[in-house]
Image (cartoon, rainbow, N blue to C red; front, side, top):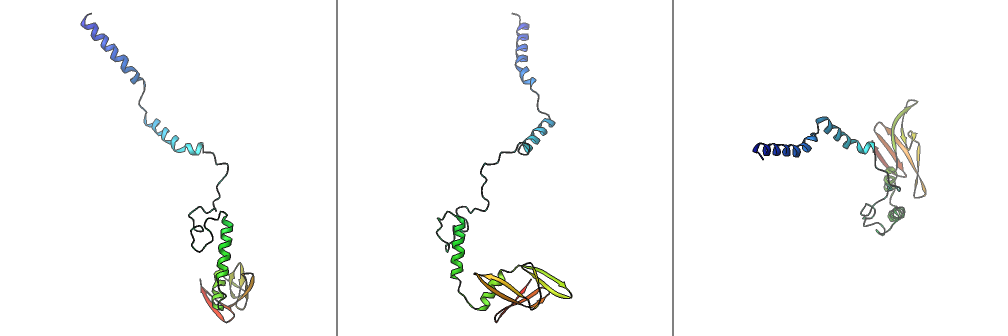
Length: 172
């Protein structure tokens, strides 16, 4: 063979080897952008299926606040409602009757104060969703016993309550 034929043969072979690589084109900017958009939106366009049984968001997992309490009941208890009931029952039994000021402090902690309002020219305070004025009585259920608190004074930003001989001023 002539040297020119060898050269032509090598040129044709290199062209044949290079042609499959040349047939695949490099991705353009728009193609890359479309791929990125598809990757980002694939979970929204085709969301994963929800589990058949949804988990309870209110369930305390092991190592939670109730299971790790040293004063609580058996940490191996399985039912959270039983744990909470046993815990609150135990704490209610441990609280001594105490004086009127201690009972008043416990009752004040249960009040929901909504704000003040002026009705017929008199300043009133919203306690447990009802307007109260000076001299009114607030009734609370404490340990299955009714407790009566008297509203002594209502001022802008302050409330004074009385239980028996004890009084307490609450600032809000």
